[in-house]
Image (cartoon, rainbow over all chains, first blue to last red; front, side, top):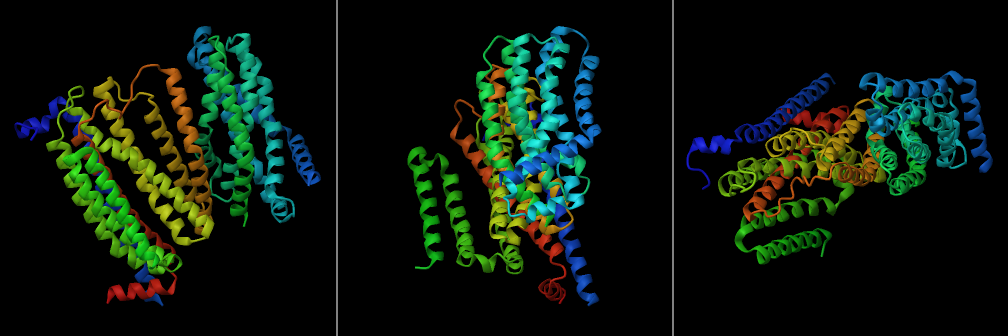
Length: 55
Length: 222
Length: 297
């Protein structure tokens, strides 16, 4: 293990902002993409159902 | 075959001559853009000659780009393009005539005007001759690559700005080698390597771009 | 022997060779990579064998839609496991860099994101080319589905690269050859997406986008070369990202694991997106209507 305590881990040797911003932004992008895709596919399914019910 | 090529070339040149104001737009665009920089940066001749290679090349790039949307649009509107697609001549060949006409009308004036603008930017004589040579070697590639973008955006909505987005990233190598050639001769070094690479890009574009443009036209028109 | 078995065997052999090669050259240092590589090889080859069995049958949106649905959880779980293991290696096992301190840990997202941005562009151009050559609808949809994820990874590579640059070089942005190329790659992605979005007829948009992706793929080596050339001439300083002189084995392992995780994530997301595209485009086809009726029931 590299870290003596949790606070040392979060501090990242003084580079906390750069490291956590990088990883946080990546996580944010992934979460956003997944949510956006969820929305898109449920919308696509909903419209498809609507169309097939009209027949 | 040569006959058809010549016909397309002379036809495009004639059309350009009849709409002289369009050509003048490209021409004055280049002059105005390159005259704006000294007003923004200041009249210090040391700074001006330092930024000159990049600024003049970017201005040439933009001037070549704004005229692209006209390359196929009028022919598309009046049906001439469809005739070219249906003609027994290879489309890439006819396209190359159109691209040559575009270069003669929009590229060549910029090359000829460059020495005067270069003087305004306090470029030394060798650098000015390199500038003209680099533009002469590089602007054909701009017309060739630009033609692909113009053909792709033919059927698209709002193609004026779209063509910039598609084409400008592809212009980057030409910009780099062109401005480096001028910068090299400014610093008393040989611009030979940059000019050779510029010529290589133009030759590669000469081989591939008409084919890609022809394919793009078939996609857009059909 | 059927084609399926041959491909399966070939994939296994390649994965095994790679794994043993790593084992003999680096010993147990890369045991995690080894296991991941073997599992991945098996899964991927299983899938590709399934497809090559009957390309044209599987290449129709109708039969791909349910297949993609079955594949998504596999890749999603694989991505989740790999990312957890990768983060564990990156933060708990990999040692502090003696030059860069803890800031170097940004490479565990930066380098994989940069790799993926290029791999995705190549994959996109590949599918675009296949779509153009074989006139297959699904390939073009695949290319379209990959583009947004590729653009996101390019953006991430840019932002994390400049976040890494600030503590290392003192500025957020340096016109470094890699960052500059990454920026141009972002422009290429944006151009592809903008072109596809501005053509109304989807088949026309497919083919125009495919041609643009191919032109871009031809240009990328020239652009990279020119940017590198420009960079070496303009700044003689030896700033070189990524190429750390001596990288600890665990650092490398963390990077590889994160890259694999991103890769699996990309596949999962692209498959989800391709399913959306299929639904949106084939809404009027009979099978889509039947499918939606089935899913309600």
